[in-house]
Every structure is written in C-alpha cells, then in structure tokens.
Image (cartoon, rainbow, N blue to C red):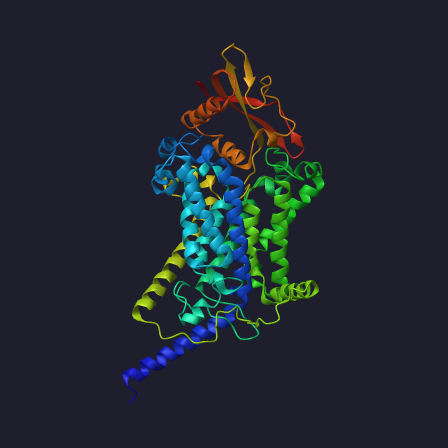
Length: 517
C-alpha cells in the first residue's frame, strides 16, 4: 500500500515535471536572453541619466520648487494625492530638489554598471515616480512607461550579463526570490533564455500597450481615414529636427499612417513569433520609434520604448551582435582572450537551487501575486483608456487621458497651440515678454521655438485646459524673471485649427490669467 508521504512525493514530482515542461514550451516566446537583460539595463540607465541631466536638472528651479511655475500649494490643490506621495514635495527649495536628483543619478549609475542592481532599481523606481508625481504637467506617456518597466525590472535578473554583479547569485548559491514564483532558469546550452513569470509579464506588458494603441486607432475616424499622421505633422509645436521637412510630404505621411497601424496590429507576434520574424518585428518597432525621435519633440518616449524592445531579441540576434563585437575587438587589439564564455550569462542556471524554505516560498508567492495583480491593473487601465471598459463615476474626471499610453489616439489634436505672454510696462506699453517685441497672435514661423525647452512644451500642452489658479503661478514666475519694469502680466493661449494640409482659419487667442507684478 502506498504511503501518504510517497503519494505526496509522487504528486510533487509530477507537478515539477509539468512546470518544467510548460516552461520549456513557453521559453521561445516568453523567455529573455541574459544578454538582452544586460542591454536593457544599460539602455534604461542611460535613459534615466539623460532624463535627469538633459531635462530635469537644468529646469529644477522652474518646475520643482515653490519659486517656479507649480509650487507645492498649487500641486496640493489640483493633485492632493500626488503632493502627499512625492518625496520631492517635502521641500520647495532648489537645494533639496537638486540633492534628490543627485541621489537618483547615483542610483542610475549603479544600474548602468550593474552594481547592487536590484537595490539601484528599487531606488530608481521610488525617486523617479516621486519626481514625476511632483509635477505631472511635465510628463508624457514615455515617463509612465519608464516607471512601469522599472518596477517590472525588480522581478528580472538585470545583472545577468555585462554587470559588476554578474554571477553574485550563483556565488551565494541563492535562487531568485523576486521573480514571481518561478526561478529565473536558463535553458539548455542551445537556448540560454531565462523564463519566469517576471519575464512573461514584462514582455506581455509591452505587447498590451501596443495592442491597446491599435484598438484606440481602430476606433478613430482620423486614423482609419489616413489623415492622422499628416495632421500630427501640422502641429508645428511638436515637429523638430527633420519634422518640418517631412511635414511637406503628405502622401508619404499618409503611407506612414497605415504602416504604423499595420505594425501595431501585428504586435502580438512579438511573443507569438520566434527567431528571425521576431527579430525583424522588434527592429521594425525600434526603427519606427527612432523615426519619431528624429522628427518630433517626444522627450524620452522613443528611447524608453526602444530600450524595452531589446528584451524581445532572441539568442540568434545576440550571437550575431557578439560575433560583430568580437571581430571589432580583434581588429582593434582589444579582444579579451582570457575570459571564459558563459552561454547562460553567468547566472549558473544549470545549478539546481536548494529546497526553498517556507519563508522563501511565501516571498515568491507574494511576488507572483504582486506581478499578476500589477499586470491585470495595467490591462484594465489601458482598456479604460481606450474606452473598452467604464471607469467608476468618481474616476471619470479626464485625468486618465493626461497620462494615457494611447499616443495621439483615438484622435490627435485638431489645432496647433502656442502661448503669448504679454507684459504691460510701467510706461503703459505692452510687449511680448518672450522676445521684447510687439504682441502678436499670428501663427509663428516655428511654434516649437516659442517653447524654451521640451519640458516647457510638455507643461504648456498639459496646461492648455487648466484653470486660472494653475496659471497664476506661471504669470507670477514671468513677473519675477522679467528684466523689464513690468506692471502686469497676461497669459494667452492661442490655437489655430489644422488639417492634413496645414492651418485653417485664424488664430484664436484666449486669455488665461492676468496678474499685477
């Protein structure tokens, strides 16, 4: 007669065998090459440093202090939850904000080199989420995507390759407890991909973003008529670099409209397809995002998406990358001849992990539940963003669209907008405070130049529907920064309708606030 302990052992063995079989079948679709994890870590760290050093740090006083355009009192009035949650809202001084940005930069550097990777990732999630919460007007969808994937990175072995921490887990002999309940196991010698619940959720999250974006475009008259992209390129405040040149080729932009919809429509193939098809599709998305970066003012968004797409490149693609790198190293005399090659990325994937303790099993079960809950929440949020599910009445305030990942969908703006900040001097004369000339509401030759920086453009774009109380600090900021004897400042938002062929009608200025200096 079979003993109960024997039956439990047999059941456990069958479960382990079934789980292993499922993982092996899922590995080509939901696994990630260790080299892809290393490249993703490096790329994301560079994006974080760029966001800090190029965009945030030069504008810290303007956008993150009480002397700027969004003091904490105004943030608390409009977004009380964000004001309470943000570490940057603890103080309104530039010194504290700069110190927090410096800590964030150190964490990003640690992530870049792979030193204490998980701690650096966790600190980056906390500091960047707090930074973005401090001023939600200087964000776009790329920033929220960045924070989401930083959080998911906590469940990935980002130090698997090209890091100071490579192999630390194998040296300690510890399994990965934060991978969502399934060890980050590599495959056999022919397939080094790491496959776990963490890798599956990460890949499916990006696919869900693209799929939701496709659905939103199917529900849009402008996208489905082929006029959306031509109209977007008539929004001259967005077009930079090659954008103004490209905007003249309506036929090419119409073709781009349909190509982008087609690419989004086949985005599920990123996990369904394998090897060459998957490589080609991932590179097509990267090319599309880099094309956006070359033509439009989108801050870190194209680079965030391109970084995540590196995770989809299969082992064959990384083998070719390493082969090219090896030939370049040999040609330059920099080849490392004494470093042994590890196809598993230094994670020692073939070494069986010790039997997990009850505490460890609890941690892994909790991590799995957190991952699944996070993914389901993201899917629900995106479905709500494209109108597939209804939001509760108290949530239907329009704030969801402010951080939506739909990217010019379902309908891109149908009007180009810019600001005129008029200053009335003590003498009674009125001037444009931007250039000191006469006030004019005519469409500028280049609306992008009316915004001093990308953050100013994001701020102006999101503020266009704001109330007078939110504009008042902006006018006060203009008063304080003016080098003229200004008695009062009036802020106007000017819009002019556009279609696929260019501007139509006349500019329509609307006064938003007027304050005495």
